[in-house]
Amino acid sequence: MYAERPPAPDLAGRVACVWHLVSETEQTQLVVPDACVDLIWGPRGLFVAGPDTGPMPTPMAAGDTFTGVRFRPGAVGDFFGVPLHELRDRRVALSDLPFPAGRIEEAAPRVGARPAAMRAGVRRRLAATAGADPAGSALTRALREGRTVAEVAWQLGFSERQLHRRSLASFGYAPKTLQRIMRFQHALGLARAGVPLAEAAVTAGYSDQTHLSHDVRRLSGMSMRRLLSPAGRAA
Image 1 (cartoon, rainbow, N blue to C red):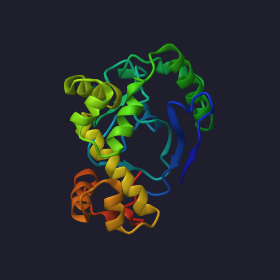
Image 2: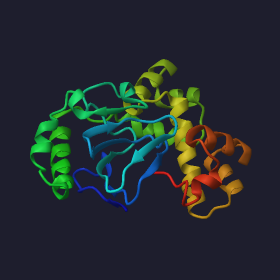
Image 3: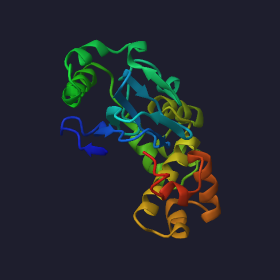
Image 4: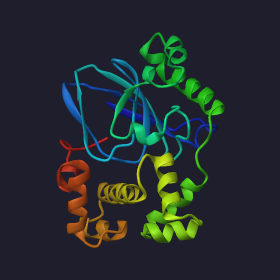
């Protein structure tokens, strides 16, 4: 069972949702890149799921419970106290980072208390750390339009090296990787809404359906049709 709830209004600028997952059977949950970073409370405690560049199969036992706070792409800022690219493709215990994890754990002795404790901990931490780069939203908008990295850098008034540095800091990705992941997620969303794959490919900015298929396999490890099936559905 998986459920999402929208964040409180004061968190909505940087938090996409608060989610809860209970694994009903022993399974492997596929997580695919989405440019987001999650703070998660699982069976082994609090950890961070960094920005992914490829598929991340996650084994779960029956009854395992996970509660997460998902940050919007580019909105993490200095929340975890380390450069975001250092968390790329990693799952890191919160206790290994400069983050006051103990205060969250002490506030939630029961599984049912975790969402409130995590929201409170996130709210305190956001107030105490540097926010997101204001250029991040402009960067994502420009990349969504299919512009080249050189065009985006010129539009924002940066050199390509500056753009690369700011993209790594905000998203954990180089600009080209960020663009590929955003394009993939756009196409995946269209396909899930019932748009034919050829049309979804062109709308999302791919040259054709074959181009889409190559990126889907690179980022998810399977075909789009398999990814859309109940057996392959990814988080």
